[in-house]
Image (cartoon, rainbow over all chains, first blue to last red; front, side, top):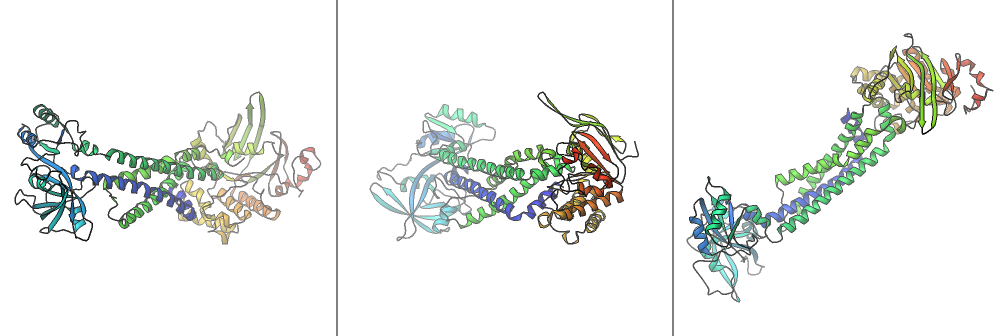
Length: 382
Length: 251
């Protein structure tokens, strides 16, 4: 009965309710787009770290868990691997280079990441082979790099690296392509640690060592060992290091929490605005309908029917608005240029849509309460 | 007592505000038989509407009793009152009678749906009732597409469709012109008589009293005069009470 009444009212006032559904749709677009942008920016920042097959990451003490600030001696990596309870460990070194796609075009910025093949930190290839130590001039690229420069397994790519005061060009053969492994807003190229140290940008090109300086060490614990135990063991044995989990590591990236905080604030305010707009609209609706609600109660409509009709109307209108908004957001996302990082994950979209559907009834709570309290005699002016 | 559908015994309603006590209705005893249609008349503030609101269980009495078919109704909570209203009472108001987004047929069917007795057979009965009220062309019209008179006729159909024992009408002709007002009350009266309901109409308009069986004049919350034969309505003329009725004309 409640659904019957609310459906009839919406159907017979299609234009009014459709326009209001569009307002909810616009709010949905804004919230979903903000969520997608937040997810996209976060993914661009953390994708590689988030997908690491590791339990803990070793950083230099006082580096604030920043992969850029942390510097670790190669010997520390070797000693770490020997600690009891560690199943495996891998060194990771970060740098940036450019990929020259075409001499007449602007080179593409990529993250240049040095790892030890088959150790934690080296991504698995989806196409071609996993990274090998030999030959040296080979690279595993991630899917976003492959898309960006249109590279395939077996292609040769040229990277440009500034060493000393000169821009030097190095050629690498793509032997494998991994899934998306973006790091710090750039697509990634993975090479062995020794190749990385040879080709990476550096101020003194002649200073080449066989034991490069790392940024972090990815550690995988044995199944029976707790990360708490392992953290204590490593910090006891290795000087000047501290450990953290992957989530803390990517959240400690410069600007990450500020960026996500800003987007979450925008999202929060949009939810608040949505709640107030929906609440305000339905409250005005109820105020306009007071005599009608009074009449319904006077002829015997129970309070729960009046309230249920009000809430089902809010739910129907919100649902239509959210569906339109979701479709519009996906349509908008398809038309956006590829450099706008808007990603939608099932979990973030589900959470956002659920929240959007909840703000309707929350916003309309006051109006439902108002409908519940309508006195037939007062409303009918008897 | 049981021969009456509606019976009130010393029904009173008193409003208290600080030290001010207002007796809106004072010890009113009223009996209405099956198929009897009565008019409650009186000046503004005489207690007619308060009386109607108590009979409709929209307002609790301060003292006295109301019996419907010999059964008292008191000590009911809001839920029970709502159930009582939708099952036992048919109501027509002065304004805001219809749900604006439901058609004439749907407005009448509303009472069937509220009572959980909606069925194709009942829906046909609703349609027949509307046809009988001369609304052949308005079955699928929204209230905004109908005249005031047509709306009132739909309201009458709605107040009768669920076979209530008591039918109440609060100034049903207030917003109608004389011709339409007479037509509406005539139909109302016919249906109450035919279906053996107890009907009570509050009105300011004495011209409508020729369609009722009894006229009860209320003054200051009490029954001042009962006119058993409405043809004698003109006995009120010339009294000081009549002057207070603000009636535009006699029959």
